[in-house]
Image 1: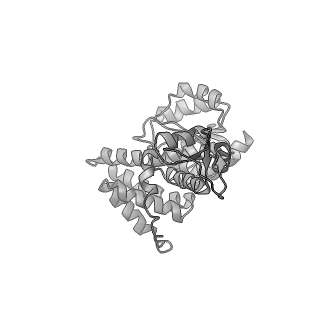
Image 2: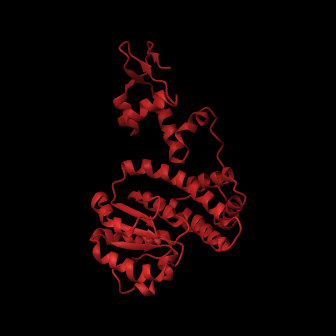
Image 3: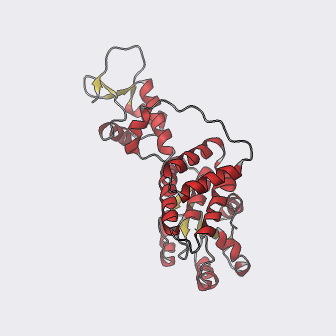
Amino acid sequence: MSHTAPPTESPLYPIREVSRLTGVNSVTLRAWERRYGLIEPRRTPKGHRLYAREDIERVERILQWLNRGVPVSQVKDLLTQPEPAETAPPAAGDWTSQRRQMLGAVDALDMDHLDGLYQQSLALYPVGTCISELWQPVVQELEERWEGQLGAALQRRSLESFLRTRIGIRLFHANRTARGATLLLDTLPDDDGSLWTLMLALAASERGYRIALMDAPLPFTDLPLALERLRPGAVVLCSGKAERSDVVRRLLPRLAEQLDTPLALCGPVARIRAAELADSEIEVLGDDIPMALDRLRPLIRQH
Protein backbone atom coordinates (compact mmCIF):
# COMPACT_ATOMS: atom_id res chain seq x y z
CA MET A 1 0.00 0.00 0.00
CA SER A 2 1.25 3.52 -0.82
CA HIS A 3 2.23 5.69 2.13
CA THR A 4 2.18 9.42 2.86
CA ALA A 5 5.43 11.20 2.24
CA PRO A 6 7.37 11.83 5.45
CA PRO A 7 9.65 14.84 5.87
CA THR A 8 12.88 14.02 4.02
CA GLU A 9 15.87 15.73 2.48
CA SER A 10 15.96 13.26 -0.43
CA PRO A 11 14.44 14.63 -3.64
CA LEU A 12 11.02 13.27 -4.58
CA TYR A 13 9.72 13.16 -8.14
CA PRO A 14 6.14 13.35 -9.48
CA ILE A 15 4.93 10.56 -11.72
CA ARG A 16 5.32 12.59 -14.93
CA GLU A 17 9.01 13.14 -14.17
CA VAL A 18 9.56 9.46 -13.41
CA SER A 19 7.87 8.63 -16.70
CA ARG A 20 10.22 11.02 -18.51
CA LEU A 21 13.32 9.64 -16.78
CA THR A 22 12.52 5.94 -17.27
CA GLY A 23 10.47 5.90 -20.46
CA VAL A 24 7.65 4.04 -18.65
CA ASN A 25 4.30 5.77 -19.09
CA SER A 26 2.16 6.78 -16.12
CA VAL A 27 -0.53 4.17 -16.79
CA THR A 28 2.08 1.39 -16.63
CA LEU A 29 3.64 2.79 -13.45
CA ARG A 30 0.23 2.80 -11.77
CA ALA A 31 -0.45 -0.76 -12.96
CA TRP A 32 2.88 -1.96 -11.58
CA GLU A 33 1.89 -0.46 -8.25
CA ARG A 34 -1.76 -1.53 -8.03
CA ARG A 35 -1.79 -4.89 -9.81
CA TYR A 36 1.66 -6.26 -9.10
CA GLY A 37 2.94 -4.40 -6.04
CA LEU A 38 6.25 -3.72 -7.74
CA ILE A 39 6.70 -0.16 -6.48
CA GLU A 40 5.34 1.78 -3.50
CA PRO A 41 5.48 5.53 -4.12
CA ARG A 42 4.92 8.00 -1.32
CA ARG A 43 1.84 10.23 -1.35
CA THR A 44 1.26 13.91 -0.78
CA PRO A 45 -1.57 14.92 1.61
CA LYS A 46 -3.74 15.30 -1.52
CA GLY A 47 -2.87 11.77 -2.69
CA HIS A 48 -0.43 12.59 -5.48
CA ARG A 49 2.33 10.04 -6.04
CA LEU A 50 5.95 10.95 -5.27
CA TYR A 51 8.90 8.72 -6.13
CA ALA A 52 12.30 8.64 -4.43
CA ARG A 53 15.56 7.92 -6.20
CA GLU A 54 15.44 4.29 -5.05
CA ASP A 55 11.98 3.96 -6.62
CA ILE A 56 13.37 5.09 -9.95
CA GLU A 57 16.24 2.61 -9.63
CA ARG A 58 13.66 -0.09 -8.91
CA VAL A 59 11.76 0.84 -12.07
CA GLU A 60 15.00 0.49 -14.03
CA ARG A 61 15.58 -2.96 -12.51
CA ILE A 62 12.04 -3.97 -13.46
CA LEU A 63 12.75 -2.91 -17.05
CA GLN A 64 15.94 -4.98 -17.06
CA TRP A 65 14.00 -8.11 -16.09
CA LEU A 66 11.27 -7.40 -18.65
CA ASN A 67 13.85 -6.90 -21.39
CA ARG A 68 15.26 -10.32 -20.53
CA GLY A 69 11.88 -11.85 -21.26
CA VAL A 70 10.57 -12.29 -17.68
CA PRO A 71 6.76 -11.84 -17.41
CA VAL A 72 5.77 -8.86 -15.29
CA SER A 73 3.86 -11.15 -12.91
CA GLN A 74 7.14 -12.88 -11.97
CA VAL A 75 9.32 -9.82 -11.53
CA LYS A 76 8.44 -9.06 -7.90
CA ASP A 77 10.05 -12.24 -6.54
CA LEU A 78 13.20 -11.57 -8.58
CA LEU A 79 13.54 -8.04 -7.19
CA THR A 80 13.88 -9.42 -3.67
CA GLN A 81 16.71 -11.77 -4.62
CA PRO A 82 20.34 -10.68 -4.25
CA GLU A 83 22.10 -9.73 -7.45
CA PRO A 84 23.77 -12.86 -8.92
CA ALA A 85 27.52 -12.97 -8.97
CA GLU A 86 29.02 -12.25 -12.35
CA THR A 87 29.65 -15.36 -14.42
CA ALA A 88 33.07 -15.73 -15.91
CA PRO A 89 32.77 -15.53 -19.70
CA PRO A 90 33.48 -18.68 -21.69
CA ALA A 91 36.83 -19.02 -23.37
CA ALA A 92 37.05 -16.89 -26.51
CA GLY A 93 35.64 -18.76 -29.47
CA ASP A 94 34.27 -21.61 -27.34
CA TRP A 95 31.12 -21.72 -29.42
CA THR A 96 31.17 -25.49 -29.83
CA SER A 97 30.71 -26.05 -26.11
CA GLN A 98 27.93 -23.45 -25.87
CA ARG A 99 26.08 -24.95 -28.84
CA ARG A 100 26.36 -28.39 -27.27
CA GLN A 101 24.85 -27.10 -24.03
CA MET A 102 21.95 -25.47 -25.87
CA LEU A 103 21.25 -28.59 -27.90
CA GLY A 104 21.26 -30.64 -24.71
CA ALA A 105 18.84 -28.24 -23.02
CA VAL A 106 16.42 -28.45 -25.96
CA ASP A 107 16.71 -32.26 -26.08
CA ALA A 108 15.90 -32.47 -22.36
CA LEU A 109 13.23 -29.72 -22.55
CA ASP A 110 15.16 -28.03 -19.74
CA MET A 111 13.86 -24.49 -20.23
CA ASP A 112 15.48 -23.19 -17.04
CA HIS A 113 18.92 -24.21 -18.29
CA LEU A 114 18.13 -22.86 -21.75
CA ASP A 115 17.07 -19.55 -20.21
CA GLY A 116 20.37 -19.26 -18.38
CA LEU A 117 22.29 -19.92 -21.59
CA TYR A 118 20.12 -17.43 -23.50
CA GLN A 119 20.57 -14.67 -20.94
CA GLN A 120 24.30 -15.33 -20.63
CA SER A 121 24.85 -15.18 -24.38
CA LEU A 122 23.07 -11.83 -24.73
CA ALA A 123 24.90 -10.43 -21.72
CA LEU A 124 28.34 -11.39 -23.05
CA TYR A 125 28.08 -10.85 -26.82
CA PRO A 126 26.33 -8.58 -29.34
CA VAL A 127 23.04 -9.92 -30.66
CA GLY A 128 24.44 -10.40 -34.17
CA THR A 129 27.30 -12.50 -32.82
CA CYS A 130 24.93 -14.60 -30.69
CA ILE A 131 22.81 -15.36 -33.74
CA SER A 132 25.70 -16.06 -36.14
CA GLU A 133 27.78 -18.17 -33.79
CA LEU A 134 25.18 -19.73 -31.51
CA TRP A 135 21.46 -19.58 -32.24
CA GLN A 136 21.51 -19.97 -36.00
CA PRO A 137 23.84 -23.01 -35.99
CA VAL A 138 21.79 -24.57 -33.17
CA VAL A 139 18.52 -24.12 -35.08
CA GLN A 140 20.07 -25.50 -38.28
CA GLU A 141 21.31 -28.61 -36.48
CA LEU A 142 17.99 -29.09 -34.71
CA GLU A 143 16.03 -28.83 -37.95
CA GLU A 144 18.24 -31.52 -39.50
CA ARG A 145 17.70 -33.75 -36.44
CA TRP A 146 13.97 -33.17 -36.36
CA GLU A 147 13.32 -34.65 -39.80
CA GLY A 148 11.29 -37.77 -38.99
CA GLN A 149 12.40 -37.86 -35.33
CA LEU A 150 9.95 -38.94 -32.63
CA GLY A 151 9.31 -36.06 -30.27
CA ALA A 152 10.50 -33.44 -32.78
CA ALA A 153 7.24 -31.50 -32.65
CA LEU A 154 7.41 -31.25 -28.85
CA GLN A 155 10.98 -29.95 -28.93
CA ARG A 156 10.22 -27.48 -31.73
CA ARG A 157 7.11 -26.09 -30.07
CA SER A 158 8.88 -25.80 -26.72
CA LEU A 159 11.78 -23.90 -28.25
CA GLU A 160 9.46 -21.65 -30.26
CA SER A 161 7.38 -20.85 -27.20
CA PHE A 162 10.55 -20.07 -25.25
CA LEU A 163 11.90 -17.71 -27.91
CA ARG A 164 8.55 -16.12 -28.73
CA THR A 165 8.02 -15.12 -25.10
CA ARG A 166 11.49 -13.67 -24.57
CA ILE A 167 11.92 -12.06 -27.95
CA GLY A 168 8.32 -10.80 -27.97
CA ILE A 169 8.76 -8.90 -24.72
CA ARG A 170 12.08 -7.54 -25.92
CA LEU A 171 10.43 -6.32 -29.14
CA PHE A 172 7.57 -4.71 -27.24
CA HIS A 173 9.94 -2.47 -25.30
CA ALA A 174 12.36 -1.88 -28.19
CA ASN A 175 9.56 -0.84 -30.58
CA ARG A 176 8.61 2.02 -28.28
CA THR A 177 11.94 3.75 -28.87
CA ALA A 178 12.89 2.41 -32.33
CA ARG A 179 13.65 5.12 -34.88
CA GLY A 180 14.29 2.92 -37.91
CA ALA A 181 11.88 1.77 -40.60
CA THR A 182 9.19 -0.79 -39.82
CA LEU A 183 9.86 -4.33 -41.02
CA LEU A 184 6.92 -6.67 -41.54
CA LEU A 185 8.23 -10.17 -40.76
CA ASP A 186 6.28 -13.33 -41.49
CA THR A 187 6.76 -17.07 -41.96
CA LEU A 188 6.02 -18.89 -45.21
CA PRO A 189 3.23 -21.50 -45.08
CA ASP A 190 5.26 -24.72 -45.47
CA ASP A 191 7.56 -24.04 -42.52
CA ASP A 192 6.81 -26.04 -39.38
CA GLY A 193 7.28 -22.99 -37.16
CA SER A 194 8.70 -19.50 -36.83
CA LEU A 195 12.25 -20.04 -35.55
CA TRP A 196 13.90 -18.21 -38.46
CA THR A 197 11.42 -15.35 -38.26
CA LEU A 198 12.01 -14.96 -34.53
CA MET A 199 15.80 -14.89 -34.94
CA LEU A 200 15.49 -12.30 -37.72
CA ALA A 201 13.17 -10.20 -35.55
CA LEU A 202 15.67 -10.18 -32.69
CA ALA A 203 18.58 -9.21 -34.95
CA ALA A 204 16.62 -6.54 -36.83
CA SER A 205 15.29 -4.98 -33.63
CA GLU A 206 18.83 -4.69 -32.30
CA ARG A 207 19.70 -2.65 -35.40
CA GLY A 208 16.97 -0.14 -34.61
CA TYR A 209 14.15 -1.33 -36.85
CA ARG A 210 10.57 -1.31 -35.60
CA ILE A 211 9.28 -4.87 -35.91
CA ALA A 212 5.79 -5.97 -36.96
CA LEU A 213 5.96 -9.72 -36.28
CA MET A 214 3.17 -12.00 -37.45
CA ASP A 215 2.47 -14.85 -35.04
CA ALA A 216 1.19 -17.14 -37.83
CA PRO A 217 1.57 -17.03 -41.63
CA LEU A 218 -0.50 -14.21 -43.09
CA PRO A 219 -2.50 -15.05 -46.25
CA PHE A 220 -0.80 -13.47 -49.25
CA THR A 221 -4.10 -11.78 -50.11
CA ASP A 222 -3.90 -9.82 -46.85
CA LEU A 223 -0.42 -8.41 -47.44
CA PRO A 224 -1.58 -5.34 -49.43
CA LEU A 225 -3.86 -4.36 -46.53
CA ALA A 226 -1.02 -4.96 -44.06
CA LEU A 227 1.19 -2.62 -46.09
CA GLU A 228 -1.51 0.03 -46.16
CA ARG A 229 -1.98 -0.08 -42.39
CA LEU A 230 1.58 -0.73 -41.16
CA ARG A 231 3.54 1.13 -43.88
CA PRO A 232 6.66 -1.05 -43.56
CA GLY A 233 9.93 -0.28 -45.26
CA ALA A 234 10.10 -3.91 -46.39
CA VAL A 235 8.33 -7.26 -46.07
CA VAL A 236 10.57 -10.22 -45.23
CA LEU A 237 9.26 -13.78 -45.44
CA CYS A 238 11.22 -16.54 -43.72
CA SER A 239 11.29 -20.33 -43.90
CA GLY A 240 13.54 -23.20 -42.94
CA LYS A 241 12.05 -25.26 -45.78
CA ALA A 242 12.31 -25.16 -49.58
CA GLU A 243 8.57 -24.31 -49.82
CA ARG A 244 6.31 -25.50 -52.65
CA SER A 245 7.44 -24.79 -56.20
CA ASP A 246 4.18 -23.07 -57.17
CA VAL A 247 4.56 -20.68 -54.22
CA VAL A 248 8.17 -19.83 -55.08
CA ARG A 249 7.90 -19.71 -58.86
CA ARG A 250 4.43 -18.24 -59.31
CA LEU A 251 2.73 -16.77 -56.23
CA LEU A 252 5.65 -14.92 -54.66
CA PRO A 253 6.92 -13.29 -57.91
CA ARG A 254 3.35 -12.18 -58.69
CA LEU A 255 3.00 -10.77 -55.19
CA ALA A 256 6.30 -8.88 -55.49
CA GLU A 257 5.04 -7.23 -58.69
CA GLN A 258 1.85 -6.09 -56.96
CA LEU A 259 3.47 -4.56 -53.89
CA ASP A 260 5.09 -1.12 -53.86
CA THR A 261 7.32 -2.22 -50.95
CA PRO A 262 10.38 -4.50 -51.26
CA LEU A 263 9.52 -8.19 -50.76
CA ALA A 264 12.44 -10.29 -49.51
CA LEU A 265 13.15 -13.90 -48.52
CA CYS A 266 15.38 -14.98 -45.65
CA GLY A 267 16.42 -18.37 -44.27
CA PRO A 268 17.19 -21.69 -45.96
CA VAL A 269 14.41 -21.05 -48.50
CA ALA A 270 16.42 -18.10 -49.83
CA ARG A 271 19.52 -20.25 -50.25
CA ILE A 272 17.69 -23.22 -51.77
CA ARG A 273 15.58 -21.18 -54.21
CA ALA A 274 18.04 -18.41 -55.08
CA ALA A 275 18.64 -19.52 -58.67
CA GLU A 276 14.92 -19.79 -59.44
CA LEU A 277 14.26 -16.26 -58.19
CA ALA A 278 17.23 -14.57 -59.85
CA ASP A 279 15.06 -12.86 -62.50
CA SER A 280 12.16 -11.96 -60.21
CA GLU A 281 11.51 -8.80 -58.20
CA ILE A 282 11.95 -10.74 -54.96
CA GLU A 283 15.02 -9.78 -52.96
CA VAL A 284 16.89 -12.96 -51.95
CA LEU A 285 18.72 -12.21 -48.70
CA GLY A 286 20.25 -15.62 -47.96
CA ASP A 287 20.30 -17.69 -44.78
CA ASP A 288 22.92 -15.80 -42.80
CA ILE A 289 20.78 -13.42 -40.75
CA PRO A 290 23.28 -10.60 -40.04
CA MET A 291 24.38 -10.61 -43.70
CA ALA A 292 20.72 -10.67 -44.77
CA LEU A 293 20.11 -7.48 -42.80
CA ASP A 294 23.17 -5.90 -44.43
CA ARG A 295 21.66 -6.68 -47.85
CA LEU A 296 18.27 -5.36 -46.78
CA ARG A 297 19.46 -1.93 -45.63
CA PRO A 298 20.10 -0.36 -49.09
CA LEU A 299 16.78 -1.72 -50.38
CA ILE A 300 14.91 0.15 -47.64
CA ARG A 301 16.86 3.34 -48.35
CA GLN A 302 15.99 3.14 -52.05
CA HIS A 303 12.33 2.51 -51.21
